[in-house]
Every structure is written in C-alpha cells, then in structure tokens.
Length: 167
Image (tube, rainbow, N blue to C red; front, side, top):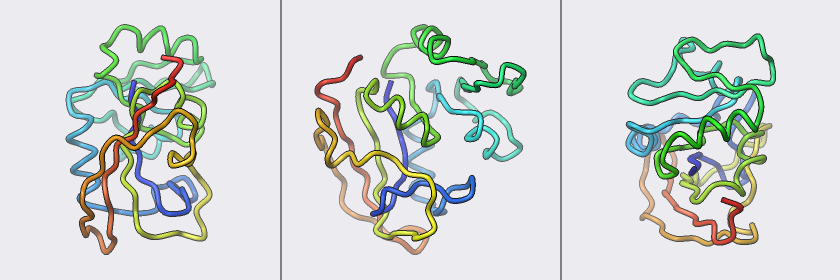
C-alpha cells in the first residue's frame, strides 16, 4: 500500500472537514496516480467526496468504526484487521491510501511510498495534519519534481520511500 496526499508547509491537509486548497494540477496527479487502483479511505473522507459517491474507475474501500455505516458501491470494512484482510486481496502497488488524517497517522508506517504534493503556503486555520515525512525515521526522499504553479499556489510533487516499513 502507498499513500497520496497534498499538504502545506505547516503539514495541514484539511480544515472543517474539507480540503484546504483547490489545485487543478494536484487533482490531475491524484487521478493519474489512483486510476485503476484500489483506494482506501476513512468514513469522513468518503463523505467529503462529491455525492458522496465512490471514485470512478477504482475499487473504493471505506473504513468506518460505525458498523451500521455502509457506503454504497464501496467495499466497507469496520476494523483495521478487516481492512488488512481486504487489502491483502490486491497487489501492494495497486492500493493507495487517500485519507483522512487519522488513517494517514495510523497507517503511514505500513505504506511503501508516500506521494506528497507540497504546497508553498500555510493555512493558519488548518485543523487536520499529516506526519512530517521530512523527519520520520525510515523515510527518505526518493524523487521530487520541479515546482509548478496551480490554483494560485506553487506546488511540487515528491515521493518518499519507507526503508524500514512493517510491510
């Protein structure tokens, strides 16, 4: 399993249940990186999707501790054990964790790679954050693309590799 996220300089990824930034180039990158794959998300992330509906062209797995929650058109799991049982059915390079913050913070050490869009901004009202991949033990910067302008912000796409994962 890998993860994908966009974060600002303060490691902020969300505010009041929504993404902070609307970045066309990041959305293209997200679609490219997750197309045809299995995406894993928490209940709140699913509920934040338009509709809310499953992401097209992907198998959607939704983790919710609420056993009565059932995201239509998705594979619903209700514990970490159920999640890993389901994820084991797919090739590791075909599974992408897409949020939210609680799952990123809980599962980053079980991911092989982190695809992070770094946004050259910092929202002081951010209330949802990711770990600092620049400082995490066992994570190294594998590659980084040149900065691009999108949605009024400068961003760059970075890939971190987990060298000591409990994979």
